[in-house]
Length: 218
Image (cartoon, rainbow, N blue to C red; front, top):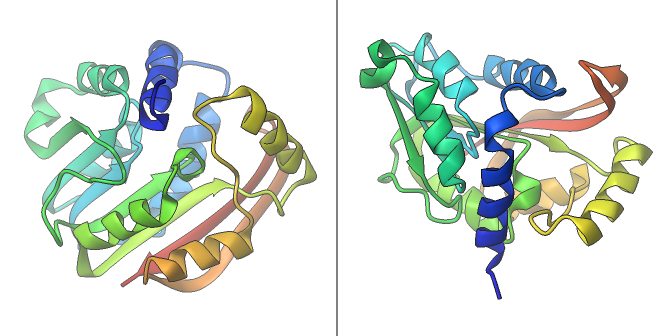
């Protein structure tokens, strides 16, 4: 029987070739831009995207960073292959992609000032372990921004969650804002400011949007 990590890798391998070009790719990039706007990239030392897909956010961050590398990890080898293919050679010195599991991030302690995890944490079988790993590789004065769908923000998202739990092997659950607060606390991270919620209809070609965005620090 395949492990959950292998099921997730297989699903995203299958999606990789259309991931940057499908109907809701503009929705992904729009909200990733919002997540990145909460970080101080121009003053920080290094950026990491956990669950980076084909690397759009990593390439965007690389253009703003003054210090350190812009890095991305993803469970899917095909996603990383496509991320490398979409990265111009001129940018390669400042950009790094690796196949990696969020529960065992392949970087040393305190490697990054800025970390994002967008549209990904609902796939993690052990989200506290993943958050603890993000905390481990975060510099002392750094920030983590988490963005994902939330069950309590939109009834449509609650319905989607129920269906995806039965029909999508890689999906674990969409968390509520209260559940996410508890996960962050268990990982010994602190939420900076308020959790931002977004509830929209027909948003960037996506029918239902129900999101939560939170910024965390050590």
